[in-house]
Structure formats: structure tokens, C-alpha cells
Length: 241
Image (cartoon, rainbow, N blue to C red; front, top):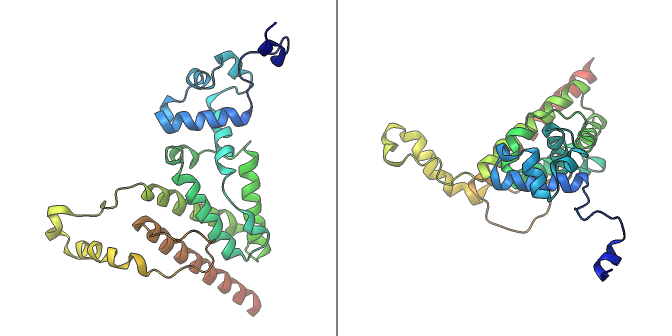
């Protein structure tokens, strides 16, 4: 018996041991490199170096794989601030972390944005933290899901914007048919460095913001300002009753 055989142990399989994390990571890598349509059970089995039958012992369908991917990717989203910070600080940090995660996983957005959360334990725990933090701060239960959807809509759209060409709004030779818009595009670059820092933002290494970063910052700060006004108005009405 060789030394490798003794180290491996008699009867231990030569094929890689599959775990849900390995399956999800391999599926993400496959989608990143070849696109969502390339994700099949046989392609994933090949990516993992196992037989399709071995893969079916762990996941029964492509939907099962997508649920694993959803949980695997969403584990990287930081929602811990909802346990200790004011709701607006927590929502700000959650949204920024959410966007950062999906900027790294752009090919997954069209699927993840419409994938039901049933049977996704980590994703449900994330939403539970958000919901608990908001309701603890006085948000009506009826507002919670709409708030989450509003933030996610901004996050997913901004993640796409982060990988778009920076000259996406350049009108080229047709600036004469949209002179006001063209002027706005020209002046946008002059404002990139002048957007005020958000005091609630998690500390990061200094860097020059991209147009997508600035647009996201404007959108998120505006969204939070609207939420604050709506919540204050609700509290005022309640106090007046």
C-alpha cells in the first residue's frame, strides 16, 4: 500500500467530498465565467469533478442550486448594524454592503432579484434582522417589506450602473437635439468630488468616487431622507390622536 493510500484510508472515495458550500461556490464560478444559461447539472458536476449522479445526491434540481447560490452570496452582506445602530444608520450600511456584494456578482442579479426566498435560511435571517431593526425603531409592519424592496431596487440598479461605461450618457454628435441634458452630463463630472460625505457610511479606504458611486450615494441619501420624513409624520399623527 502506498503512503497516499494509507493517508486516504481504505474505502474512502477518491472523488471530492461535496458540501452545499462547495456546490454553491462552484455554481457561482460557473455563472461568472460562462453565464447563467451555462449552469446545468452536468456542467456543474464537471466543474466540481464529480459525476452527475453524485451531484444529484445533494441537490435535486437547478432551482435547488439557485437557492444555495442565493444563500451563499447573501452571507457576505453585512446586516449586523440592525442589532445596535439607529435604523437609518443600519439601513445605510446594509444597502452599501448589499451593493458591494452584487457588484462582484453582476451575472446573478437577474435571477437573484426574482428568486423566491422560501427555503433560503441565511437570506431569511438577513431579512429578519432588517425587519426586527425597523419595527423596533417604530416602523409599522405594513411598511417593512416595501422598504426592503425599495432599497433592493436601488441596490440592484446601482450595481449594474457600477459596471456600465462611464461615458454611457455621452450624447456624442447628437448633443444638439438634447442640449439641456448634454449640459447636465457635462456638469456632472464637475460635481463628482463635491457630494457631502454621509455620516452614517461605514469607514472605508479613501478613493475617488465613480459616477455610479455618486449616483448611488445621492439615491440612498434621498431615500433615507424620505423615510425619515414619513416616519416622523407617522409619529406626529400618532401623537396628535
